[in-house]
Length: 57
Image 1 (cartoon, rainbow, N blue to C red):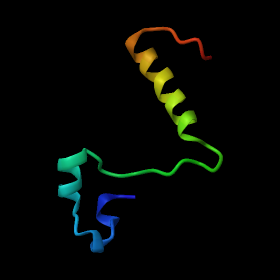
Image 2 (cartoon, rainbow, N blue to C red):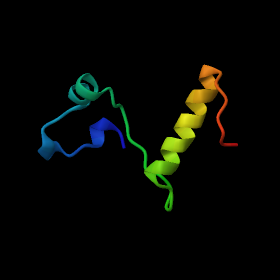
Image 3 (cartoon, rainbow, N blue to C red):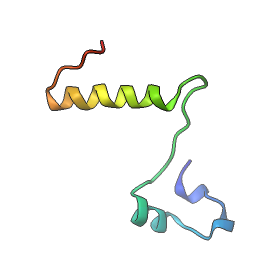
Image 4 (cartoon, rainbow, N blue to C red):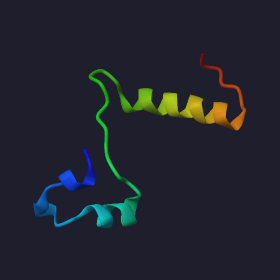
């Protein structure tokens, strides 16, 4: 969902959201995917970028 799709009733626009949060758009996870699943994937990728091995395959 792009910032432009936020309800007008909230009285916000894309520039306002980006300035305050840095968020440009949102995504929904697939059914059955938890925030923990997303966090684990992000952590493993961050460790790989940092050159540090993870204990998760």
